[in-house]
Length: 132
Image (cartoon, rainbow, N blue to C red; front, side, top):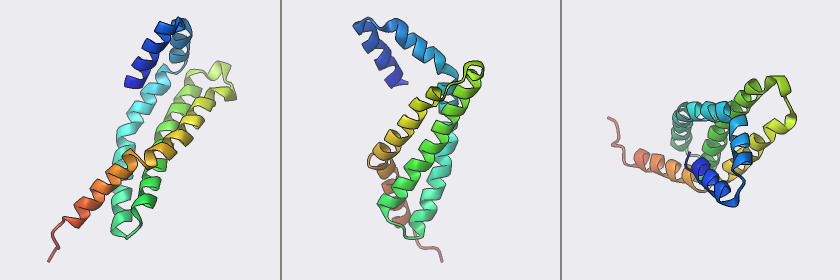
């Protein structure tokens, strides 16, 4: 949401506010779908990451799996809502932002937030007392 507000402010300063509102209007339901899919995706990916770390997988590979899984869920929701919202005038170009952001988000979040979350999960596993 912060990114959207920042983009609107930047485009307003550049005199491109009308085109920004047109782009935002085309994807408003898709953005809502993305946000609604985010929390369940994070929960589900966290459970998968926990299982992978307990099984002894490397931290970076678990982080990559976490990031790809979360990004797959949220960007599929985004693209699905974009198609539903614009079904009457569908174009394959409508899916392009979701596909690009999926790839960029998966690669970037693997070494940033995904790695941090998986590290915290691994630290929690290490600090667990042994069960009797």
